[in-house]
Amino acid sequence: MMRPHLTHYTGSFEAVVGILSNGFAWVPNRRGLISDLLPFHPFDERGPQQFGMISFTELEPGNAAAHRKAFGDFGISVSKTWAERHGAQKVLYVDRQGPIFEALRWLFQTAYEQLEAAIEYPDDAALRMAFTNKAMAIVDPEVKTIFRRQ
Image (cartoon, rainbow, N blue to C red; front, side, top):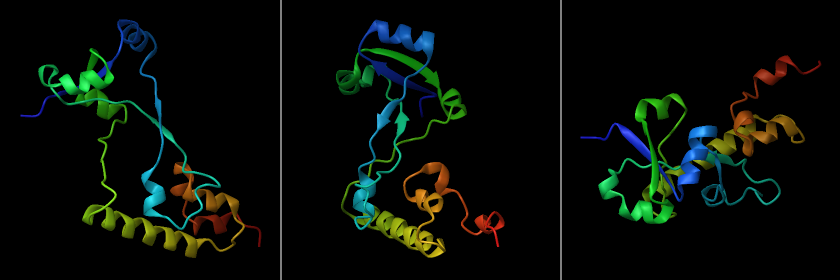
């Protein structure tokens, strides 16, 4: 049976008070895997946009000794419903070798090639942002023609 709550562990009582007073703080999440999935893209020039994250676990407190050792012994539990309503998503850890990595690399490289082909003007900085910016990644290059002067 799955636990209906998620727990965020932290290292001090003061941190718990801070969370209860101000909400959870987003911690930067460095994107490392993307450079391995798309090794030919010059991410050094402009890396993928980083988004914050908050770490939760489904482990029961009695089974979370290793997790508590890494993050702290103080915790706040939230319901899964609350977490989903606030945009929480499970993390998928991917090994940099094996069939899952190869499938993801194929998917990312295929999508990259399709985006490159859809960008009509190579200097179109707005559409090129789709490679590194989450908000721009959803822009349809075909819709852009509505705004282009003829």
